[in-house]
Image (cartoon, rainbow, N blue to C red; front, side, top):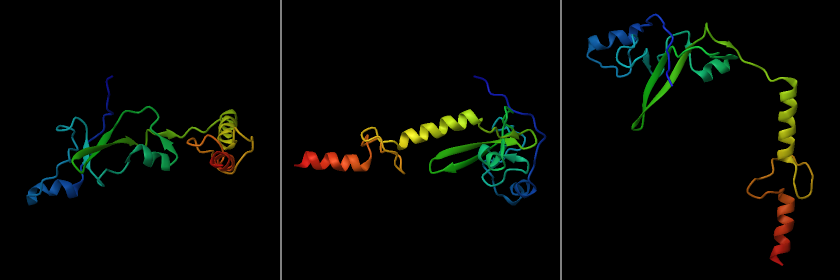
Length: 146
């Protein structure tokens, strides 16, 4: 599997560019992509116009097949975490479910609320650990206790 990356013009952040002159090293700042393979920014410093999948979703967008434009790297405990960034201008609107898909989802959720023992639809999902509604489980538990 090969991953291709979108070519973007370098997006420098002046605040981070000035830190090495003050003797402060920034581990995950590589706007040219020379050290990490693609443009890399520290946590909370992504340039404007680049968003994660979750941020795009909150805006009603999706990456839409575009290549990764940049990444955010940060340390979490002893691990290095990564979040890929996508360009907002190339993002596409989120797709909506068709009426048939919505009907199938409604049916599946109704099935999860229907007890296989008594056949009643409950206002909660039937616990998979019990395999039946709480009323049927309590009734069977009391029969087994006597």
